[in-house]
Image (cartoon, rainbow, N blue to C red):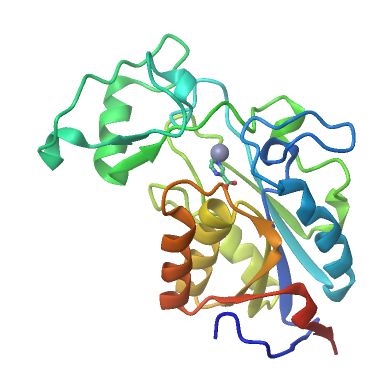
Length: 252
Ligand code: VGL
Ligand code: ZN
């Protein structure tokens, strides 16, 4: 049950944490790191909670968001489009629309774009973030990459976004499910950024795949646009994802 106060005992053999996109790109300036391209308010404040809960888990997995410049999710790939404005499949919705002009930097064709938007229905345009070949496309420097059994990189296909670590936005599997399953994991404890996008989408896919899923809420923060947080909370609750706090966790 979401937000119950029950304590949750970690069973090291079959529980794992899944750290979603713990990257400077989603954090404001902190500790000498510059402001990230898609800085989430208080994003860096998850770091002490991540550290505090780390020893509970023997098995750990992570995802990393990484995009080439010219990616289909970036406002900079289009002419006269601002970040934080969604692209809709306007003609099919019968709404007023204006031509979407693909810019010179784009790494996808007009055909790929039309096919993609028809399938996903809506693509939020983001500021440049998690850019491949820069520190923003990597795990936060204080995070020990070697502590993870697997780090799933997502979002590298220029013609498709990927919020979830399990499937990209076209519902193509990343392979993370097989990897996690192979280790005998039954319950996943999610931490990371952002609650209302990548953490939430990853949690929803994980329950659909048969895992029992917990989100450690104080180890997350949200992009928080329009109704994104409330909508995600409802979807998570309906799907049976348990949203808990780090102080409810106990070791066995
Ligand atoms: C994310 C928007 C775009 C996230 C990644 O990690 O939540 N959000 N790319
Ligand atoms: Zn992204």
